[in-house]
Length: 402
Image 1 (tube, rainbow, N blue to C red):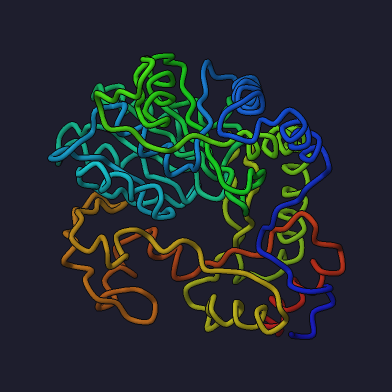
Image 2 (cartoon, one colour):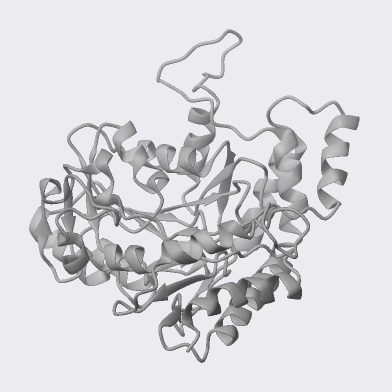
């Protein structure tokens, strides 16, 4: 253990329980609704619908499961193409492989670190109409969702909005997760609200959500005996976990307020350091500030790993910004459209140096790779005290002392 003033480890973003969760879970125990489904599942779905302003919702076992089902609902299969955010966690793009389709990766733009609309349009021009587009809202900050939606509509292409990290975020006054034909949320343990593990598929199209519920319960037909006409999945959320989610949802706005306070504290703490920039917040949105991130100027000798290791020595968790998908060995053969409109084949990035770049190429041609190379996620746990925040800021500032 290091010399951190915190008692125990300081986490990047750990669950924060309030007691309301136990009330719903106790109700499930008291009524013996331990098996999957039940009043908490129904209640959680309804409360998410009302909070984000969407017509229908299906509570599932994970956000990844929700993306998988979204692709199935849209008929994506072998031989199809899906345009996906490049700067994201792999769960955004993995399900495309599950259904036998192929990804085309779209570079990030610097205004929000999210999918670049100009690159998306270029992908349509080069590759033609895909079966679907998946856009992620990175670290709780919305992408340029109206522009992306407009491009998809022009090409009559359905949009899946991966709002796994952005529940409670607003884009031009509207909740994220509601811009696409299908939206998805994640309630994994480190998210801004959690069910321990779980997710949600939402849509204004009732037929999508009804079909998602059917498929997520093993596609069992409405017969006295077990009958299955199509392949189903065991993707439904349990009544116990949904109870945790109902209690957490009561505190989502409070969590957003505390996450914003963390971001603003970092921003003020680094305001006089020209080499540091916090992750950008566009004027037309209100993020949920899930994770506060910083990037270091290219010319600076300080690297993200230097800070990560120093924090680690003090028993404080931080991490690199997501490594873009085009740099991942598993996706080494996938086409990639950069922010300058060029198309790079996966072979150009096969193999990597200590920065995850092949022959230095990705440093020069990819916005996402540049953000990854210069960025890190700072500890963003809402339980951090003022003393802990001062310690973290002090460790970072020590690298930039004049």
